[in-house]
Image 1: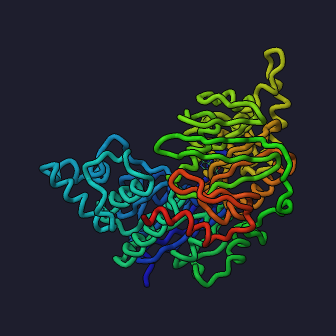
Image 2: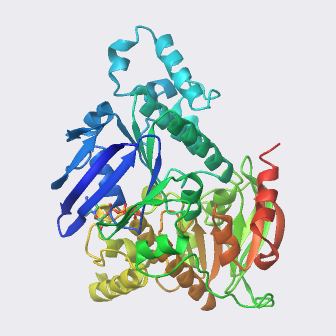
Image 3: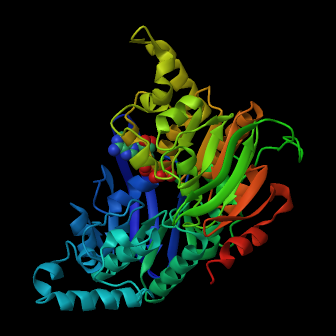
Length: 502
Ligand SMILES: Nc1ncnc2c1ncn2[C@@H]1O[C@H](COP(=O)(O)OP(=O)(O)OP(=O)(O)O)[C@@H](O)[C@H]1O
């Protein structure tokens, strides 16, 4: 099979960082080519070059046998390359059909009537196996999975031959990932090539044909067979070390019995999201919530934090009632929340990495109205090192960091001492395998120091591997609670999926 895309010697320099230092990539028509690498390895930069969002400083790109240069994203998509980013660039207030044909020349003069556009949109959605999505509804009303399908329909509206997907499964629930894979397989059957970025290695094995590994802006391996390359080899190419998902050792079962509750939640109800949820987290204990997207898991965490008002029930932190609707009181009482939508909810994009880390504890560095800059700086430096944030410079604007490194900055914020309870919503989303292991170790160490942790993750192995105790949620209710060691992945999937099959 001939190569559809050939990238050779791609170099991209940012101020102070050589993000790409001579990268090669070959992609064949009809294959799923996975792009792997640690946070900051250069994956996003490489695909932004393909998408026409960045210009390379050096190197060549050949697409369909011709050398190409993309001046802007429209040029890339018109040549047949579409990119689907994690933060989908859809306009919430426009309809599905309007979004699909946004920026497409067919939208301005191709359709004489709105009906024509809606019909064409319906055809594309049906081709993706999602004929149930109505072209006329507002995109903002769809689920994350639905929006992703609309983005793909938009790509297909341009007759693309290559679709680049940046961590498409990160925002999806387990069953939705299955749907996505079906859509990808149908597309590759038609000869469309897919470049697929993910930090979940088991997915790569399932959907990938070949793998290219980036490390520190260089190609560590080109086009390895996805199914026949041992995971240990892929991981050592990425990290230069032999690590896999390693969970830190846990205290023996029952070790937390008799210790005081940091968090107590009784009969908590937020209509339409969850009902009558009771749970507790003891000092030093990690409690995991397992459930599908939409099971109420993130909403429970937000309500505990005071960001949502329950209609019934109460939340107590170390014996004190947390008043609903007051997140500042929750923070004062010693809660920390790392929310799921980190960029929108948590990061000050134009501020430095250091300030983003120390912001929650700023009161600590202020004396008589002066901020103790040295103490603030030392804390920032220490946490940048602990979390292995790259590049290791706390003065950089956080917006120039790769996605995974931004993630680590948000989590680092809550490692500033003095927290009694950490609420972690998808703490490792977008974080590479090497950093995951470090993050797990940091979370366990905090617990060993007495902090209580309430953890939400879509990755069942993560909940089972890290937590001491697990609560399984289905449709807003707790349907099971036990020691994590008594459960295995198939059993938990069975419990959480049962409801979705109804
Ligand atoms: N606009 C920018 N200005 C300065 N540096 C940047 C910019 N964009 C990216 N970088 C740097 O380039 C390097 C590569 O980042 P990139 O986003 O490509 O990594 P990535 O492999 O996609 O990581 P992740 O898995 O975390 O998404 C990082 O060191 C990052 O900090």
